[in-house]
Length: 444
Ligand code: NAD
Image (cartoon, rainbow, N blue to C red; front, side, top):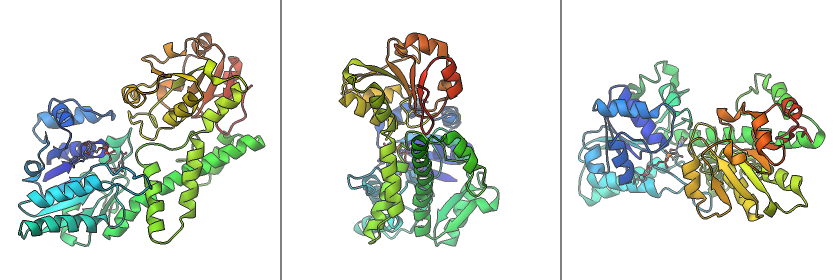
């Protein structure tokens, strides 16, 4: 099948490579000429495990091409997937400017029947909006061309995106058109071979499903973080409490790890967009509002522990080493990362930061270029030299079982703030560390 993918970010490029891998002819279109040029040279601009070889193989075998020209890129395609970004506006609503631009350009240039697939996360009603924009452009051109608009939200997670796309838990298709649903079933057939993985529903339900799913996951995280904070107050240990509640099959172990709050380009913005949608419809979404508030608080928890520990000594005299800048492991994405919040709070108090991340260093260097108190290092251990403490903010595997003797030797004080509960308190106590984690009794 001929497929066009508009927007070659984490979602678009993964979808494109996976469709091409199944033998489809895929053209990717992006407005950013630098990205397109790099992709045409076989270099990918994002870090996503397993993606580069997949892109390269399919590019070399001629099934995957890249262009900045939408008209040319979608000329032969039956499906045009819209995978552009949908960042938040200042009021929490979803910024649909890129989605609208793509719809307008499609309407201005399409020459034959297309199925426009909204894969970006977009508020309920966006498919109708996209249909209206395309029709308006066709009317201006006085063209009578049939088209269909479908909702097909994406559920992949960064860090494991290729696996998620190749083996999805489900593929949601929102359409009222039986023929379009069948065509999408054919396209997704190789990934969703068991029939119950394809879930066809009304367009608005499909759009809502994505927000409901992300809000549910965010709720689990804020819930466990609130319980963790309470554990600290009452002298309980969240590690035990987590196991205790997760063993109940109605609750389960997934997504109840306490930490420094959820980040990334999806959960924070999608919870806020859900809140906005609810308010637009005269509803106060009490739960989503609390989930968001708890998370904003949680992103400051480690900075608070650090301030409290050093108080009343001013932080201006102190250097903090940070392991992890990405919002989670296995990605270079730093959007809404708790590490950035922590750095902002502590540098505002004059603390100096030396940070390391296995892959997100370059992105962080760009984002923090204006902050003279931050230095991003190249090596996990050398940034520790003469620092006053180590704070762990991302759960990269290489931070899980480090050389504690070396850490202790390099730091000014044997002091660790663990925002991901990676370490055994007993072991760290054996090494003579002072250790603060989340929802656990500190070792002092
Ligand atoms: P991204 O920012 O990584 O990529 C978006 C791409 O779209 C960029 O390369 C940009 O240059 C391009 N673009 C913008 N306007 C364009 C235009 N008019 N024409 C062509 N290209 C254009 O975004 P992402 O993380 O891939 O997310 C895309 C969408 O998918 C968002 O709605 C997001 O919420 C959703 N989503 C993301 C994830 C994730 O884990 N990142 C998971 C599921 C859903």
